[in-house]
Amino acid sequence: MFERRYWSLLRPDAVEALHNQVFRNVLSWYYSILIDDYPAKFHIAKVVEVPTDVHIDECDEDCLWGVHRDLEKVFTSLWREVRAEDIRFNEFRKRYREASKSFLDVKIAIARNMLRGCRFCEWRCGIDRYSEGRGVCRLNTKSFVHSWFLHIGEEAPLVPSGTIFYGSCNFRCVFCQNWDISQERPFNGVEVNAYQLALIQKELRENGARNINHVGGEPTPNLHIILESLKYLDVNIAQLWNSNFYMSLEAMDLLKHVIDIWLPDFKYGNNDCALRLSKVPRYVDVVGRNHKIAIEWGDMIIRHLVLPNHIDCCSKKVLKWIADNLPLNRVLVNIMDQYRPEYKAYEYKDISRRPLLNELEEVYSYADKLGILWRDISR
Image (cartoon, rainbow, N blue to C red; front, side, top):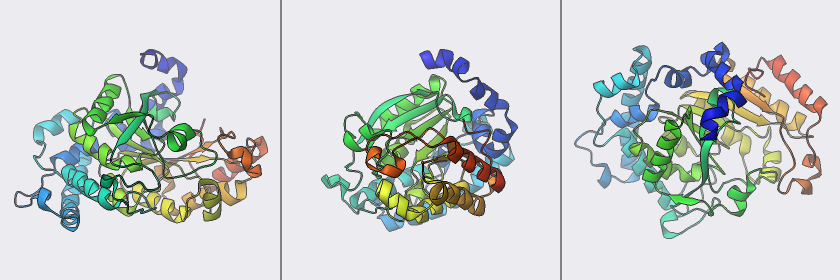
């Protein structure tokens, strides 16, 4: 395919990223999978065995969460062992067999159970998606993929990124650049089951993807299908969660043992702007909480899109929140300058133009003042 042959010519910085010491230090787990072929976390989850006296098919959700808490300890110990002993993927598969019922199976069972009163995200609609109920995301149990390809427009360490665009979203951003698949026509993609999604990921890996980039729209409403797809995925590749980060605590618990690198948006520095422009409540509270959880369970590149007229209320506050709440030596921040008015943005005077150069320079200067690692990753 075109991207496989020519991506290195179009993105020489992606080749250089393999040797960039800042990237390798901050994204140490991701690079361990990418360069050293350590097993991605979902492979570790697949060998953590459910005790033989536990029948997860007969468990209710409370029982499943209890099993999940017990197996998390085993997973954490094994993940530490992989890193401490530099265990490569082939050696890992020789040492450990996939369990007939594993930690991953418990996660799948919980996610399937949660669909009966959906709380994948912090809207917590409580809709029974099995009975065709539709909450904010408007999805039942089906997942729709609108495209998948090797993306060469992502951050340099990620390129080429095996990107899967899911339909639907739980936000209503008035400036959304993917509004067609997230808001207007979320069901126009190809319906996929878990096995088909695994085949898509395998194809992307075999064509040179450095990671599997779950995005949209928003991947969160598709959590059950994504988790189950990992059961059928037999190649080793880092899993990347490219999200608005409005997941529930329960969803974070299901994701944190299988996602290797997080790519969250941090759009707003206050809840009022989030409610006005994305129609979502409690934004900073939820997204901030999830950033704190995620950094403990993988590597992170935060994206912040600079909006015109939102320098003091959003950009500076987002950067200050990051500096105050996250370990700066473990986080890269992509300060994005490519905002353009899309979708309904022209109906909102404050965001009806591109950001000015002096606005961008003010944000860059503030990031430097805070000691944020942004220069290598932003482009």
